[in-house]
Image 1 (tube, helix red, strand yellow):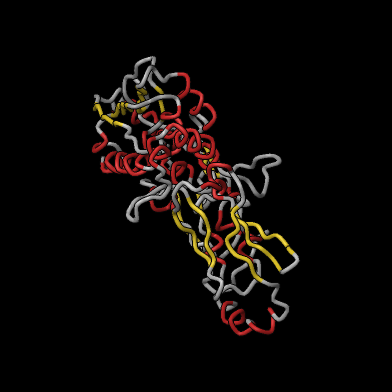
Image 2: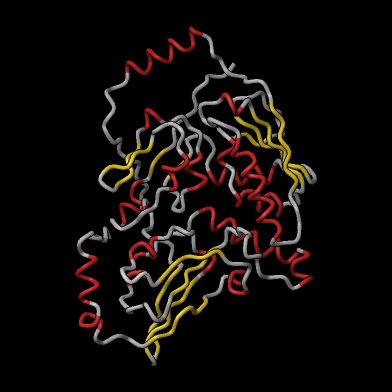
Length: 355
């Protein structure tokens, strides 16, 4: 029998969008956390490790890799998926059930995101078997609706390639110790811990670059071009997505009429998905679609509301990991004269860059 508790995640505060700029409105991790381990205080994310139940749903949704597993790392999970793909089938199991040796095991299946599905398909997987416990009774899941959401995500994503990934579920009995003795032992251990801080501090990574492309985007960048090369969509020349379809591929777009040319959006982009190049006629805003994680920070900081992030289809630039010019404009020599009133109004909310 296994213990009924999972290792909490680690939080890398220096990567958090809300630390980087006070204008960030990102709440993706807060929206999925089932245990109140994440709180919002004075505009900052607070992580309470003693409340974390290790479901790792925050890892799946964070656009900045702010959360790390203390079970299986991203690199190890990639290797497990590659190694345990058997023919055209891949089996992934929740840690709390009795698992087969050939299964990939994660704390909770909420950890799996579209980039993992893409990687599995790259290795020839056509059927994904998810082996779960009774999710409706699990404190990490609260309900099993997320299983259906994973299937919908897979259907929409693989429609880009004119193919389908079949996902099946198999429910098992828990293989955890829910005895009174185990419960009391855990309770005593918790009582021995020091009184938790209001906001427990994050871990630090030595030489962690300020600008970096998240693991999810790197996985998609390695797999999408290969899947497209093999796909029916390529044969049919269908590069665009349907209007209602989620693609999980993103790029920034800028409204030329609203843009003041202040360059704030490019200066805060944490993945270098948006850069500015100086040319003879002025400047060109350049996007790198493979790097865009849909963090939305560029849109959050723009006081002119000139930029937004949109989902896009499979573009030539994405396939080649090439730059895409999204706006050409002259340098605004009167920038501070023309928009000082708008900037003054925006200072009421005091957006501070924490670079």
